[in-house]
Length: 185
Image 1 (cartoon, one colour):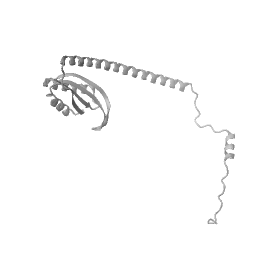
Image 2 (cartoon, one colour):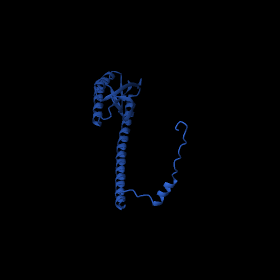
Image 3 (tube, rainbow, N blue to C red):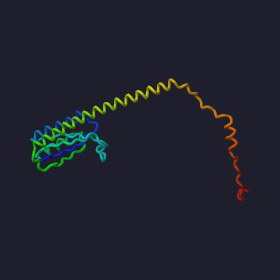
Image 4 (cartoon, rainbow, N blue to C red):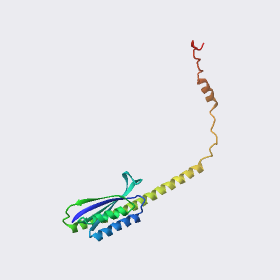
């Protein structure tokens, strides 16, 4: 049995449900071909090295599976037919997997850890959003309090003190007349 990794990039605006639909299609293709899915690794949205179909970002996924190589054409056919998939690449990760059950157990543990990290990330993002909202609210309240306490500002610019005008006029030097040349005379 060989281990393969199928990396594919999905358009960034595709929802989580759309990505899960693609994963379910791939799982169905694997089951139909008799391959064993190990796990999906969601790398998230990343900037592409170059623009693909007018997209500068993409959502990356990696599918690890065990097979003899018969499922690959069907998986790639499924991805070619999916309009939301920008690119895909299948590579041979391990030529000969000796202990298949140990590899499956490792994949199950890896998937469990990914799920925990995803839950933690969602909770952290929610806390950060709440903290940003509270900080914005506090800033608004402080601005409103400062505006209420500040006296009304005069509508026109205050004029310069009288002594400044005389100093400014006296500091200007009169222009010197240029000497006349023979051509002007």
